[in-house]
Image 1 (tube, rainbow, N blue to C red):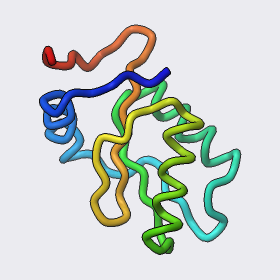
Image 2: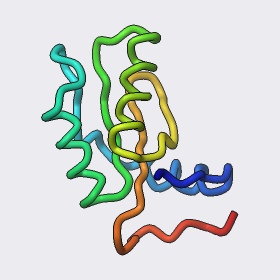
Image 3: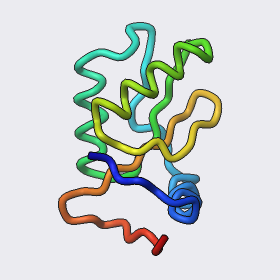
Image 4: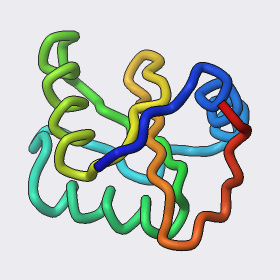
Length: 100
């Protein structure tokens, strides 16, 4: 049920995410139910978060990102190195996206 973001909206969210620090960090245990629950809680509170995916090769990182997006129904806004930026609007959105 994730929404489709336009390029303009993604650029806007990238600008907002620039100063954020990662709120969830994946370690050696990889993607667990607890980590998914933490990401889900962070998205409910903040709408826009950064997740750090440490120690994974490119292919594994891609699979982890796909799983996170699928399970949390969030949008992957940007991936830079080991940092993933996720966005999911809250029940009452705080972030006002620009028009498409």
